[in-house]
Amino acid sequence: MSVTSNQVDIEIDRKQVCRYIGYGADYKLPARISSLIDEYIENAHYLIEPSYSYVIKDIERVQGSIVVIEDSIVFRSRAIAELLQQCCKVSVFVATIDNRLEEIACQLAEDGLVLRSAVLDAIGSSAAEGVAEFVQGRIGEAANGQGLIISQRFSPGYCDWEIGQQKMVFRAVGGDSAGIRLTEGCLMIPRKSISGIIGIAPPGSEVDKYNPCQSCDRHDCRGRR
Image 1 (tube, rainbow, N blue to C red):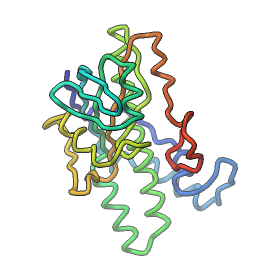
Image 2 (cartoon, rainbow, N blue to C red):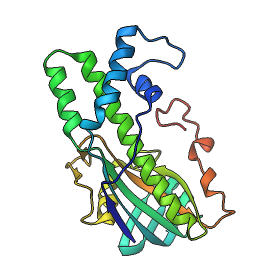
Image 3 (tube, rainbow, N blue to C red):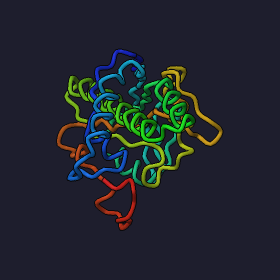
């Protein structure tokens, strides 16, 4: 099963934008910054062109830290193997807001408008998360329609899943990469893009509660959940 679409309904999370800029939840924003954030959030939709693609594939084999899924896609990660050994299927997805917002943010920075650039960049990050959450919701609906449940989403670069595994993610979605391309270093262009996998399992498996951070000693990890 493959799905590609640019029909996405998202809202920008203001609190998340503030966190990305560096303000804690209890910090009272200066009026000028608060007004700037509100103004940019209100107008951000003119700069955001969300699109996504996902496939749902059968899991063929899990052995140690290696997972083989349909079409000879191989994931190498202890954390991902522990997740997918509980699952019958896996959804592989890519999502983006395109590059227009990023271009404007870069131009603002070049013009010396660093704060405005930072605010717009944070809004772009929040919007990309919003698209990924929307995709996760659609995958959840598809799974629920078959009496199945889904896990959290996991992306290459998380835990012990190396960033080089982006190649397998993009191979899995085939030509439906939502306009996203990979650099030689496996970074995504446009930069405000998210890729990853979501496990799909029978009810009662508790795959929806799977969190490898609970058994990890790296308490200073930035990706800790």
